[in-house]
Length: 295
Image (tube, rainbow, N blue to C red):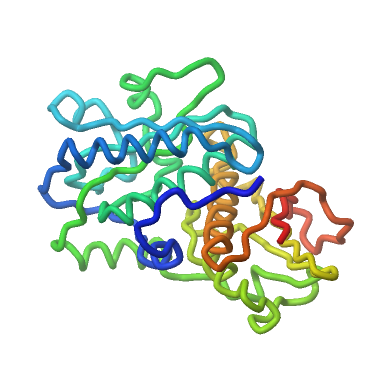
């Protein structure tokens, strides 16, 4: 299945570079016209399945009165201030559906960035029970992630930088830790990635839970076909996977798949998702095969 970039407001690669987690928002209100545009974008991505064929649901929760402000709780993310609304991502609890939700919700987030809105991925540290007061869930559905939306404040920039530094948000693993060629013992050099170098680099720019960056990609070339195998370096002892009731790192690999695909499309190297695990010796027993992008 080949997916298209559904928003044409400029380069998605530039948008990935521009996107950052915004935790402090100013008092500028989101107009109803903008909310209408957001709704259109949400409906578009609801209508497009993820790589595994699962559909996600997205809702806007407006904080337009005192009851809604007091009704939702962010837990340790309570330092997020001034936002006007939440985007709420909903899916079933199957592993593949969670991956698809991460994939689709990141496209939503990138579209919000193109609209000039600030966002912040939150998958774990919020009270799902408090959000469920405002969201109608179907059987087997749960709230997989949320994001505040609003206009980023020019104030408190120093605080933002301190938060990012503390969270390690600006620290990225190097290529030799993430990307491989033909097997897990051979590093993928940038010059060997060719035109796809930028697509690999955009995976490095992806947000992830606790900034663990658990994606591992392997490039295999056979004649005219290039296949990029996606693996998740799943940490079964990671608190986010053990205490939330679902494996939060599945969201992370969905984000990585989204970044690679939209970048490859922009680079005119569109491919399709296939699911056939290669016969490959893993150097880490935690590596889980997820899927492959064939170009």
